[in-house]
Length: 418
Length: 191
Image (cartoon, rainbow over all chains, first blue to last red; front, side, top):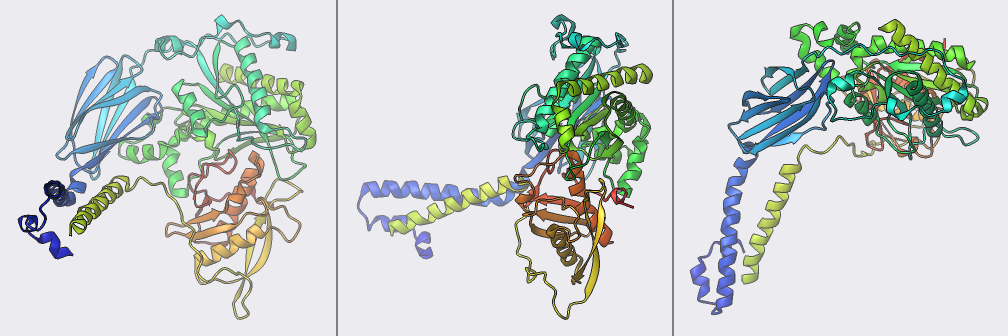
């Protein structure tokens, strides 16, 4: 059979005297030739196209755009208001692949061009920004760091009317005008006037969380408590409150902290009801993140223990890349100290108001806390797996008390902390 | 004749399409473990001539919120991977001493192995999540009873990565991060 393929087409034409067939054959041969040429070119193809990976991250006080490729690239920068343009030239054709966009400090990153040259437009939220870059070789990596130029944030108006109104007053909805809408288009300076607190009602949708003996679901209780907390904060503090969900719906864990980062939240509070295999477990506890790091990683992360958000200043130049690499997925690492202070405050507040057993402040590697670039805690109000506490958790009174306890803790936290 | 000439380009086309497809999708797959039947180790019941060793398993208790040890005799394995697998199977059987099992009883082990960097990978069956809800406490209890059990018994195990049904999962029930290997927390063990 294979010898047939090599025979001369002219010879076989004599055997078949049908023009249609000749036409068909010609088309076939042309097709075969194209395939043959393509096959010849194929071995060169995989090397010819290299991947240009684009990723974005937020660090404390700055954002990073990383362009990495197996090939060394030539690059140049150009800036316009709110936009940094990076021109890339490569020896070989490139294919751009973008990771999930993970930056709150940047508005967007887009690109034009193809094959050997591309232009990336990095849109920054602030009009004024500073940038710096670093290049690493083998593999090539261009790390661009963008910092908004410090527009002195006006001190948050300390309208901390500490006195809590009676429950009846708490239920009256706050005047809508007092609460600025979540708006991306308004100027950043306006946003800055208000501190932002993100409240995260745990679980939701098909993800029910723990279940009580009498059928109470963690997701419903966390939502009820979170709505009450939002209301009481908005009524008494000049803060903007954003909920990660305001109804029964599923929200991915990383989107919850991303919402906080995108809104430049000052605090992230995740609200949960606890569940245990043991029926008698009872009480309230407050968690902040534990890093779940091996000894070696811990040593590196020790740099951040006292960083207080001033991450870049704490890291020695030669270690910067290693340390920030670890941080990419662990924005919370830079805020552990503040998170622990916030957890202390909230636990004290729960102890004062709830009358539940004090289980103290604890640390665990909660997924929802890892990505938050601000002080972040997770509150376990009480045990839904304990029949007595399940009833409490469902009562309006207990839910209001949890909200009041957290609210008072926030008043204290901001009064003493800043 | 004509038919055979038609076949060759057709075959070439199909081949080329397949090659191009493979080239472009290469490396895009997430990490996924296929179930490999564990060679000759399906039945961990004691073999007469096998050497015995004592392992310590950690379970939960009705008394407090800590992890409680329970010792058990098993047949020594020939490799860390084999012994880790035996230990997880024993652990999944639950306590024989009235302690609470942190995982649903239907939970099975698909595969376990230890890598050179000291990470034990434990691939649990889907039952670990099915019809089972976790609160923070029960999830912390479940995750760390397993992680501590392996790190306590095997010097070679420095951290444990829990997989479910052959793949990575974010969490067991919405709480503890499983996307990176967990280091043991011996402070949770009852004194």
